[in-house]
Every structure is written in structure tokens, then in C-alpha cells.
Length: 116
Length: 116
Image (cartoon, each protein chain N blue to C red):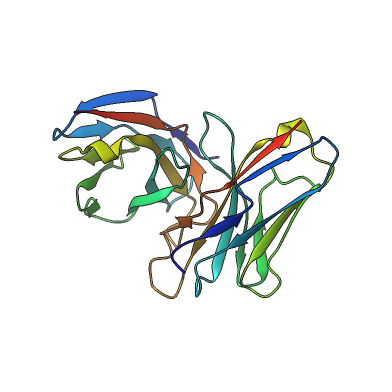
């Protein structure tokens, strides 16, 4: 069975500062994919970043980076140089293999508020 | 075509009625997914299609739920004999194997269902 834990229900960050959103996971699958999605108040889920369990390097996409620590089963999202538009819910998710985003299992999310 | 389109945006129905939602994926995306999201939770996987074939269904999907994608383009999700517990946001997403980015799901804005 898969489990995603996001322990921070809410986070605040000053504009232009960096922030880390925590995510730990548990799975018995030998290979898996880890994802972060952003959900603004409009409701649409927006893909941010993906990390495969066999990828050696941490994934980066612009201001987003995924701090993947396999032994600790953590996949924290780092947002650098926060902007007001980053205020949203952020969800960590896992797929049971590295072949795609089928059957994603999501955590409960973290609400990020960027303060001007 | 700029994104995944879902119709209607909101649906209010009485318990026991049938409802149907429609999803138009991004054209040329061969994979289509349905998720359900309740307040304060992350989305839960319901089912996914590759072209017109329904490849996976969650155990969450009771026999009152049925999804179709008859021509491999748009999809419909029908809920029969609705119950109050069906009240949720129903999200549709699509992805493309062909582009090599099959880990990237593009979500629609969802259909908010309220069962009275």
C-alpha cells in the first residue's frame, strides 16, 4: 500500500524568500514516481515537477526543485524566490511505477501563503 | 484547444438522481483520467483510459459509477442513484505518451457536484 504524508497544513513565506514543503512517502514498490502539483483557488491542478525513483539527480524545473532522499523516503519541494502568485495548495503525489502518472496517490496538501 | 475542458462547472442534484459529466481532453492526448476530490483532501484516483480502452478502475469506483470514452476523445462519467457522499469535485486530466512526458498530467478545472 502507498502512503503520502504532508505534515504541514499551512506555511507562510516572505516574498522573494525560499520555502521547503515537506513530503514523506511509503511504498513497497521497487520503482515509483514522485510528483508535486499546485492547486490555486481556481481549482485546477498544475503539474510542477516529477522525480523517478531511479533518477540519480534531483529534479529541477525553473524555481522548483525536488529534494529527493530515497533512504529517508522524502521528496520535499523547494520553491526559490517566492512570488505572490505562488500562494496556493501544494500536493505531493506518488505513482506505482516510473512509466507514467497512472493511478496517482495524493497527500492531503500544504497551503502556502506568500506574504508581501 | 488550450487545455482540458470539463462541463458543467457546477451541478446540484437531489439524492437518487443520475448525473453525467463530460471531459474534453487536450487534443492528441491519448490518456484520460478521472479523479475525485473532497474538501480538505487530495484528489483520489477513479479510473483512466488509454484511447478508448478503460485500463484501470479504482476500488473506490462503485457500480453506480461508469465512465466511457467511446471514440478515444471526450469522456463521460455517470453517477447513478446519487448519494450525499458523492458530493465532491470531479477532476479530469489528460496526458500524452507520444511526447515522452507521460508523467505530466494536465487537469481541467473540475465539476463540483452537490447532492442534496
